[in-house]
View 1 (cartoon, rainbow, N blue to C red):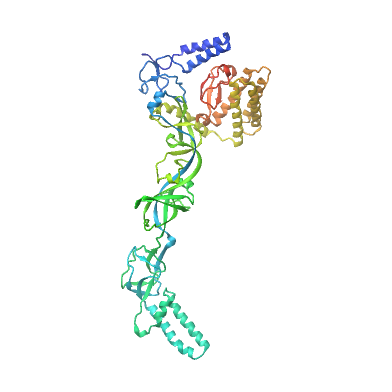
View 2 (cartoon, rainbow, N blue to C red):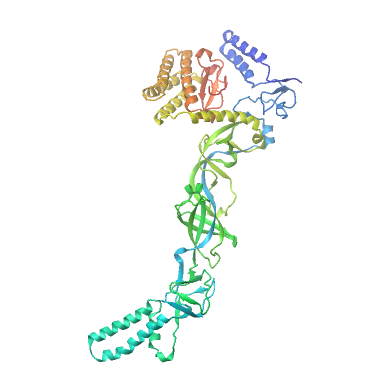
Length: 601
């Protein structure tokens, strides 16, 4: 068993040489077939029976079975895999053994589910403090409400106190009432009016402290000799539940303004949840909030978001959001912890399954299936992450496990198939590391490149679109379509030539190449060699543009770069296309599959 670093080049070179000789000695059909077969051998698309290779290190090829001397992986039969430096080719058996599973890239109606924790709190607008309103000092004689949780009713008596200041005011009212009949009997209207005003002022001095007019009238109507020390009730202005232990005892002396009770109406409560900063773009007032609490584990509660505070709290870096909920007959109580979910409907979004994305430093990579066992890593630009598929309300359980997705801004298109599971591909780090390094280098170069004006970029994109259409006509040797495409290219290149900026000189060269190309094809008998020479000059300008200003368009797989080994006479051997399969515009129908993947210069 003999190990070699790559298949022997002797026979491939002889095949190519034989093809070159037949170019001049045989008719077009056999001549092209010979050259095409020779080039396929050199590319590694064919191999002798019994040849084995290592997918991890594709330069390792052996005749017969064995293991790779680099990674110690068992060699596999060579089944037409190409050693593309930007792709990995696997047999059906390898794909099955690796457990590769594919997912689709497409438009999905997605929601961002915000998971948060929170608390049930008392509604501050329904919270009240009961304070001692009586002047001076008061002594507790009777105490009717004692501790937290006691319920008070509006107008209900909480405690009764004695108060010397109120007694003095009461005595003044009684004296005024006692003198009034005598004043009125005199018939002096002015004196009578003054007597009424005096009574009203004395009565008002008592009612201002929370004593009801009826209670004051009852006290004032009793003769003084029936009691020596009247008691004054402290009543609840509103119904509620005591929240704070009042710490009161009989005979305690109270001061004016002293807090007695803190009560609140618990029929309506607040739900407060903590939102992290990255959740804020998705949270909106009016969204439905679903939450659970351990006190009622089998029930999901729903409410509507009412407010989002405009303040990020440190150090938790969270923002409080608030909704109003009912107590539901005591199921919810202040202080309960809850788990909440807020769902933001994002509509139809181009998305990739979350499990398909591999993080490579600051970049995100997916592995795209190109069919027939070919997989290619591709850089993608992601937007909103960790999104869930929208489901009907009746099918949505709280915090139900759902497949997650990431929004795709660029790098993928609807219909792409990506790897979402497969230990072989995930563990083949050595193979992909070199690929990702090339992609990262191109992306870093793009980051360092100065920015072009948007108008200039738009003009180049139009030129590139027309260039790709022209390349397709050259592959098919379609002179009429090529002439139309060349004229369209000429007008766009002239618009770039007239624009100010760093690409104006390139625009002049593009325009000159387009004029030569159009002139070569416009002849009665098209000059294809002249047209392809002009196409090579145009390709040089576009490759230079991509290398300098937009290398990521190639590294991401949006565009593909190929090299034609037979394009020497045309002055440039590279061309750009969208498809990953070879369609050679230099060779046309003579050798449409001639070419190999290439990197930017």
